[in-house]
Length: 320
Image (tube, rainbow, N blue to C red; front, top):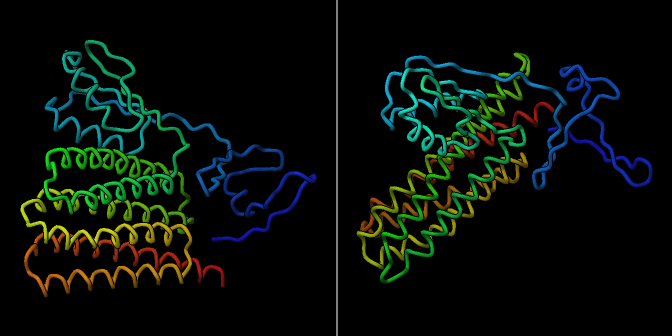
């Protein structure tokens, strides 16, 4: 992390200096244009460059079975390509399935279809960055937890409707996770070998996104089991969701601010929450399975804290 002072220019505008090494890395000079993108409290500065489209041509697809196609296209999508061309005789007979599957990936659309080929274009323009995606993933997780928090104390919950809403959260989350992987992979292709800091940041972001996905999956499993328990058990575990939501918010704050005091507060908070859940298991074994799922969620949050702690230490040492 680098600190810059604002300078008043012309009485109405403000300016900051950009690192010389960043200017050299992108071969910029005075008068060149850069792109500013605003994301809530963040401003991302990018060089004005025209990237060459990355196209992948797949001939003779092994299978048109829907589950295989979704995994196959998802794998190619996550690599960061811009255009996917599928070639095989009679492929137009499968266009309905391919079109339906494409909607599972943010920005993917069927651009062309003939009897021998289908062209898929990914329109995820560089307005997306990994921090914005992680923030949106956090919002979906908070929404999922809020759904559980509101439903757990109900005496006669409509379990079917609750599970359907949670499933929609899960589907949105999966789409964002694949987009996060895609953004990281595209970013890594642009990094110079010597730029270890940016590489570590992208890899750390990818791991945090994966932990967020694992937490979402764990909560989905929780939502399927919890309704088999009594109202007393549901109310007992409900109180942990308040703290889990706060822990998630602290995790993102720690990631974006990179301040040791914020990191330490987050790690301590999650540690105390883990102890509360463990004490609940010891004092009342009823509902142990669902409580263990929440404890597993805390362990993943603790792992996120370790990544953020190491990131902050690296940035501290770099400033020395």
